[in-house]
Structures are given as C-alpha cells and as structure tokens.
Length: 206
Image (cartoon, rainbow, N blue to C red; front, side, top):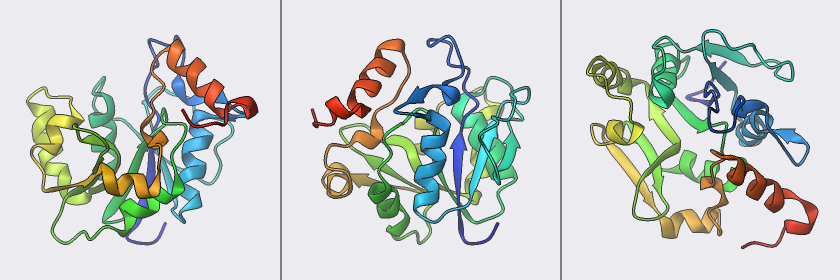
C-alpha cells in the first residue's frame, strides 16, 4: 500500500441485534461490506479490513489487507486500535460496515479538509459529533491505548481526548444533501428501511 491515507472498514461487529454478522447482510445486491469497500475505492484509496480474531475472511474480498482485533469485545475502539497499530500510512479514512449509503462526495470532502496538527477529522451532521466516517491519524494510538487500559470503549469519548476538526452539517450537506452517509443498520427495522431506500421504487429521498 502506498500514499498518506489508507481506507479502512471496521467489520468485526457481531450484529447481535440482527442475529448475524452485519458485514454479510445484502442491500440492493451488495453486502454491507462490499458497499463500504466500494465507497472507499471510489475515492482512490487502498482498503484495510478490520475483523475479529475468529472471524472468517469473506469470500468476496480480494486484494484487501486484513487486520485482526487485539483487544476482545472492545467494539469500534478496539478495531481502530488494531488498525492504527499496523497502519502503513499516516492517516486512515475509517468507515463502519453498517453505513450502506456512504457518499463518495462526502468521503472526498473529509479527505480534502486541512489536517495540520489534527489527530482526527469527523462530521457533525446535527448536534452530536459522529466518529464515523472519519479520518484518524496514527498519533491517536497512545491515546486509544490509554482509554482501553482504563476500560473505556467509546469512540465519542476518544474524540474528547484528541485534537479534532468536526465538519459542520452545513458543509456536510454540500457533499451529501440528505446526509444518507450517516444512516446506520443496527436492527432488523433499520435493515428493512435501508433496503426500501435502496430499492428502485424507493429512490425518492425522504
């Protein structure tokens, strides 16, 4: 891999509320994992896939580097920790596998933001900062290790400890007018809603 930024998909979630791994759920003919990797590759990034230690590598994934979680049941923070420990670049544009409508324009917008001495660049689509998708610098690693040692597991909590730029909703909407990029699939109802939005008859924005 080459370049200052690598794309990364956090795909180690067990999908307990869905009863199966999120990564392999299908929306409009593509798995959530494929949709995430396609979005990152559409903006010119090589992709790293972050999985649980015991998680099989999905058969559909090719030419993708694999990183395994090192801290058990630490959620997305654990995935970010494993990624940054092995990161072959200064920065990673990190996405979860459960945001099926990641807009390439929004990803490009985050990549174009000035980085200076920052450690993370994320969005604030509404009142709350959203950790993902987000750019994370390799220098976040000591802060993450400290958080994990204290038993913390929250990406929101991590952001409070970093030098962060939170891109405001007005700017995000220039890249993704409906902010579909921030829609998550966590429950069967979320999955049904996402499938309805992706279907040909459901292409109207709500």
